[in-house]
Amino acid sequence: MVCWDPRIEEMPREDLQRMQYKLLKTLVYRLYSFSPFYHDRMKEQNVHPDDIRQLSDVKKLPFMFKRDLRDNYPDKIFAAPKEELVRYHVSSGTTGKPTVVGYTQNDLNTWTTSLARALTSSGLGRGDVIQVSYGYGLFTGGLGLHYGAERIGATVLPTSVGNTERQIELMQDLGATAIACTPSYLLHIGEVAEKMGINIKKDTELRTGILGAEPWTEGMRVRIENWLGIKAYDIYGTSELSGPMFTECTEQKGFHIWSDIALVEIIDPKTEEPLEAGEKGELTITILQKEALPMIRYRIGDITCMQTDTCACGRTHPRIQRIQGRVDDMLIIRGINVFPSQIEYGLMAIPEVGQHFQIVVDRKGALDDLLVRVELTRDSFSDKINDIMQVRKNVEHRLRSSLNVNVNVELVEPGSLPRFEGKSKKVIDKRSL
Amino acid sequence: MDAKKYVIRQISIFSENRPGRLAAIAHALGEEKINILAFSIAEANGFGVVRALVDHPEKAHDKLQSLGFNIAFTEVIAVKMKDQPGGLYEVAKILGDAGINIEYSYAYSGKDGAVLILRVDQIEDAIIRILDSGATLLERSVFH
Image (cartoon, rainbow over all chains, first blue to last red; front, side, top):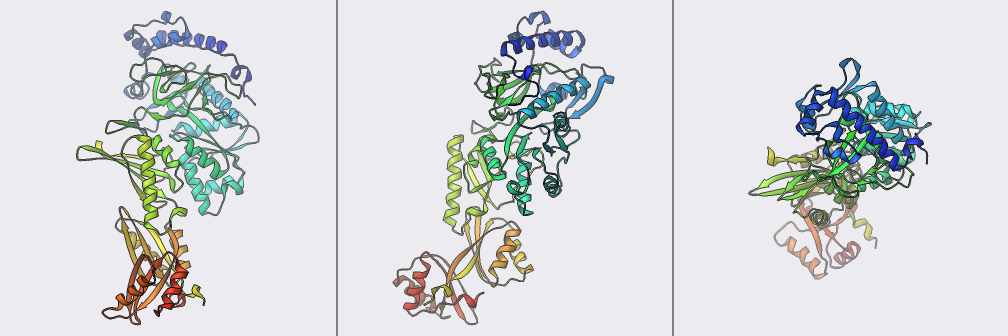
């Protein structure tokens, strides 16, 4: 195993926690003294920096939410003087009004360090050609990966999103060994390559995918890895934390969250109490080293769980598991909680249907109606109506038993569902229209 | 006897049940100057299967597949019928007496008489029994 910074990455957990406590204490004092926003928040919560006497006292601090950034648009809670800022990013706004994130030079360095460790842990380094097919610009994905990849000495191919055929030509001609993009865009690239007569597995050097920025499942990973002949690693981060920051190591057992950069808590979204390692709940992150836009106990809205044992790779930093859903993506169908990721997981087990799907929720009379539209794959069509009906029945049965709610399935022609190059919008909820 | 010369290649196309899908298929075939000799649509809940006998099945297959359609070849046979009252009965009786089960069927009537297109499970066996019973099967070369 190769570490970017072995001293930190293999540091015993007690030492890491001691470091986290010092960083937290410093952060809280600084914000209480210099940031009107955090000062008021702490007053409201009736907590003073002196109340932070050990690491677990973090739970005395107030939470932050996305709405705090929206309500203070564009930069009212920035804690660094304007002339210290070296960059802005603006969130994609898929869940509402856009939010603005600012960075000092130190913030960019921390972000890049985080990704340098992460990409190294995913087996990348000098000699790799990393195609960055995340959007460059206001979105954090493109530029974030770009600097991280350069830092580890890899060669960056900054293709950004779109013009897929050209992306595939360049991937082939310049021998890209890794690609960073959304999993749905990689599937799209795979399909377009097939149409061009290019087999990614045989005709390219590609062996690693750094995939994220949208929810995906273990089943989808297996499918991508087998189909394209690569190792697919999940990447995690949001613009509020800086951008994409953490990836899976080669063990593929969750993201290492660098303890000197971020303090992770998993809480029960209802009681707001911290949960034990291994328990599923809402991810809450405090970024310990951030100057322009400090985030304390930020509730991203992602559902996951945390593992604190030392990873087989030797890194001591805790891991969070693949994101299993979003607190606000959760659909309530006839009173039952349904996550789109569960539907994706169910579909992956059925070879007769493709990777793309669409969820349509409607109300029939007084009852919620859940329709899943999915593509019938080419190889599974045989002229017999009964066979097709059987495929549909299998899909319905599988989804029904895993979701505990009645599902109608509609089989559609291959290639007919919308493909997304950025974050995919797979749910149409007609109830709220 | 060479039963194979009576086996005809039908194209079957998976289609969503919504306006314009048949037009899209027909337009593609027209563009390639492919003539449709017989066709039917089978309808199920939410989707359909379009089945057709065309003069150039390979060309039709490649064209429709390149447009993203789900398309398959299926083997069928064609029995000649008298184009007059009782014509279908004569053929249907032969099939029934010979113990041949029909999965699906469609028919057309042209200037050379009427024809019944049949999809059966044991196609070679069916060909032998139909010929033994005195009915006339159309050869593949009539279509393509």
